[in-house]
Amino acid sequence: MDVRKLRLLSELDARGTVAAVASTLHMTPSAVSQQLAALGREIGVQLVEPDGRRIRLTEAGKVLVEHAHDILAEVERAWVALAGYATGDRVRVRIAGHDGVLGGLGLDVAVRIRQMRPELLVTLHDVAPDESVGMVLRDEIDVALGPEASFHSVAGNGGLLATSVVIDQFDLVLPACHRLAYAPSVGLADLATDNWVFVSDGLCREIGLAACHAAGFRPAVAHALGDWATTLAAVRVGLGVALVPRLMLTDLPAEVVARTPVGEPLRHHLVAVTRTGAEHTPHVAVVLDALDDVIGDRTERGVA
Image (tube, rainbow, N blue to C red; front, side, top):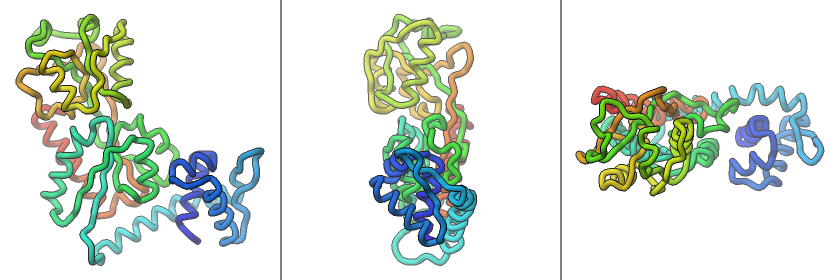
């Protein structure tokens, strides 16, 4: 049984259509259908059947999918067992992230991995969450970092595992010269007439906009920037105020003040997505250990 074809069957169960599987795995729908048909021939049973203009799993296909998650996880565990015997090229660990996660967290994690395991070659990739999930499944990256809510396709997919990293919260970031920088308390509604700085896209932008709307105003988005470092620089020179995840406030400029807004905390849950079973692979496990170390260090310094 070809485990690569088995992964396609598992993805069809998780995503529902051949087109969705093809998009995730960067294949053509025709190639996906052919591979699924070939898997059925290999094991001697029909795994899919027509369902209007689509195909669906047969009862035999459903039975095989129930076992597929365990089979694929065992394959990953086999690689773990063999990792100690590997020779040749330097082992590479590939980490992907988006929404400023790489700049705010990934860089420190890469440095920590280099300290823990200098023989590993760490590569970072700025990739949107939906794309990074497909890259994990295709074994193009090892770990995808980001807000849990951004990884819609992970839920219910037995081939993927989301490991909790931290529950982070958003702080208001103001220029030190702002009228409310050192006020006893400050809420979002107090800044309704200010100019705002947001990241250009992604979940963090959506959370910030929704919070402002819930506070009763539509923020004047004066600047839409690509990363948190640039966002903080814009606040520093007085171009606006911003909502920034606390994990991204490691190097707060002297001219900038971070305040916890009054009311219900704005939070998001960061996770690390791997293939099921791969979390125990030495070069993946070290990423999770490094994340724990970095976040623990920031918590001690009052950053997280």
